[in-house]
Length: 112
Length: 110
Image 1 (cartoon, rainbow over the protein chains, first blue to last red):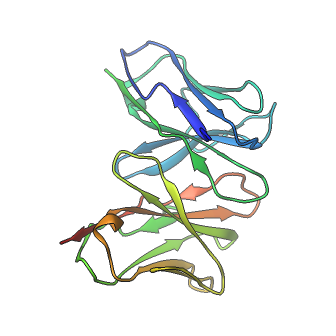
Image 2: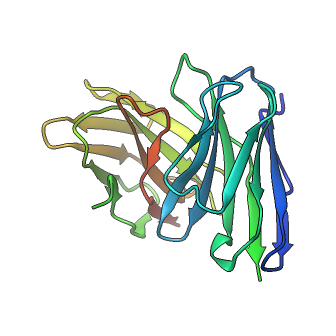
Image 3: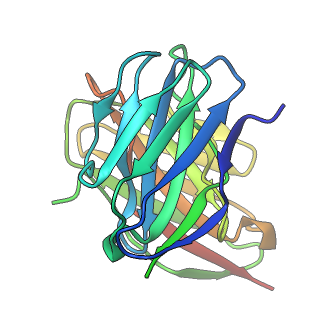
């Protein structure tokens, strides 16, 4: 089982460029999440999707947009990248019947 | 004040030692608690849930004190492979997402 798959694993962007981070899960989970992780800050929630067709803002949504394309896929878009968005991004999913997340392996993004 | 607070460490301990981490949470409405483990440059992975009565999984014991709003993780007989960052995680009632602490780094030395 693949679990949660994130692409790309690494990316370098110039300030002002746009890109989409892809996430797909094959566990039939309803809920999906995007977090960013910065040194000393822990994981902070950007956006989440409780079910197909719904999305909600988390703690740090500014500068990001998301799309829940179907039950499997949840993408994160940076429309105009800024150096402050340099971070490690994790996608996660979970079934509504238990609270444990399964994380993807992460995307290391550098904005120069 | 952060919703979940942890001592960042690092905790440097010899193999075979017993080590304990504490975590405090600020919101009394928190209802589910977890410990995750994160290896360097890897994704977090669920280590164990924390139940009100306390629970054990091999060398790992988790405790919850709702009155004082803290959670603990005890690791007995530390192994080199236990070296990692341990994340304290809470789920507040009515919230659909988990809240993570910044983590406590453990380094087990030979």
